[in-house]
Length: 558
Image 1: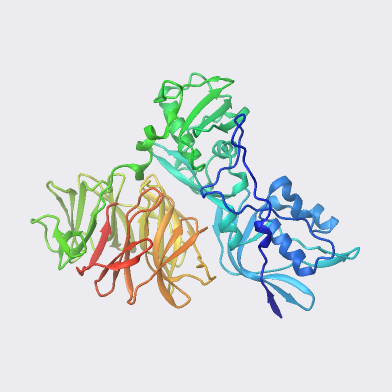
Image 2: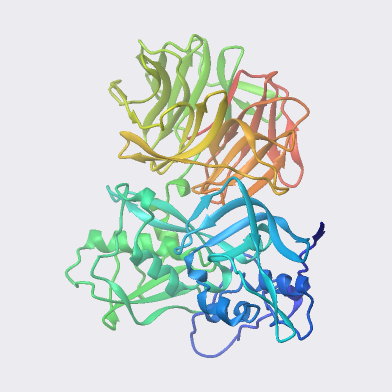
């Protein structure tokens, strides 16, 4: 048996050019600067079996014309029966030749459904492509169900997109993650995804601010040279009120920012202008006016906080640690709201806490046990505590009332760690299953119920499973920071919260006990605490640098 490296030289061919003048047209726009484009070539006469397979694997990354080029690598019967729209499987592995059979062997990274929503994988993958000779030319007789793409191509030629839908109270937007081939990222397709509605995990959590009667009009959605997208709708009642229009504009414009140079939105309905509250004199709703709908775009404290020698404080530079207040009791953990205005202090015995204004009178909360994983979300305070039947997630109201939330864990699993998104919709969860701690994702319903467990098996860039996760925190609307072990080494990883992308930030020379992250658009500050109490902060490209104060816990605001 011998491994065959998948040749990617075809990537260098046929870079597409976009005209710089002429009428407004819809063109794909990627998040990265223009680079290598996919230009798969049809099979060459006399190509060897491994060249045929290499060409097919590359061509599956290009969906143009219903995978027209990829189909040329198949037998006629296989082409007729192949349904690439059934979904996409992403793998980490290699092509294997054995006794004249050619297959892909590796590990399953995850899969995309027909809408582009990613589900993390886990387990092994093996597929024999059934190469056969047809009139003297090698062709593939057994294509996969749907599309099979290796992680290298997926990370380079699929765009991670963030759609948004509106919170029920209309105050902020909530993300819904998708991954599409770059060639399919167009304003019209984004608007259609908005019309199709949110993913299953967000049903009951969000509302679609675009009326159900709406559909995309004949002019679709186009972007001009200034980054303004014009969306043509049909079916929207002109009686839609001001608040409804306001929410629709915010949701739609933020979703269109998946096209990076989008700066504004103009809407027409039935061919006529459809005014949106807050638009400029020339009828453009500018992104700069919609920042309040993005929770993470609101002002936030940039400080790293912690507890050193039972004193809550903040780091000032590398050498100083400054107490938050002089009237606080001995503590073991501290939390602050995203804007830094609210404070919670957990007593050193974890049996009580103080919560309230950072500079004002704090309310004492007693009769709790094992208080940990504290945080503020949308002005409310949350924590894990020890309950009569195991770990509970509780919320604390402004008047001090403690409410235990319903947590629906799978049978045989117990909640051991949680980090809630600042939008209040999704949670990164650590759960105990036997002797193992596993990572998962859950949905928070109206701040009262945590449900919808989805396990998140992750692989690093080398195909190693990430295990022994000790802590996880949100650092953007769509990414987590976690500490785990891969290939025998403990590292810190930045992970897209659907599991579709994993990046290692490396580790330190001692055991990591805790991570901290400041949730900001696109990702915020990151720090870690070693078991010995040493604190390290991350900066790119320098990596990890040590602070001189040792602490028992660390946190950023949020």
